Image 1 (cartoon, rainbow, N blue to C red):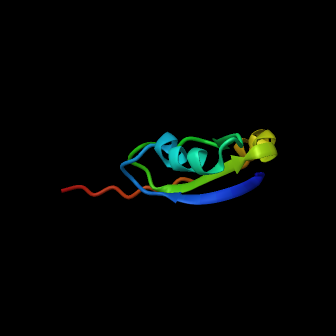
Image 2: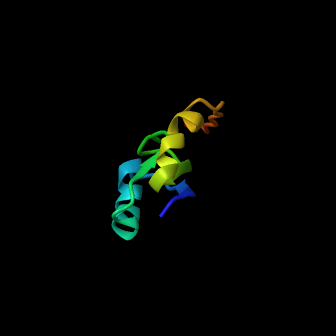
Image 3: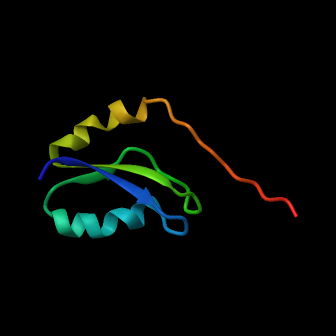
Length: 73
């Protein structure tokens, strides 16, 4: 299986943990992500499967935007 999967990674889990069920489901296809999000971050995780994993370098070169919310008490 070849494809591009966009996942809204919730805070509290690692990017690797997001991939675990996908790897089991899409096995034996190769599965990888185009950039790690911090465990505490929420955001778009770009996942590539099969032959699409060759496109990782294209995604990692794209401009990224980070937003943060800081609550001071």
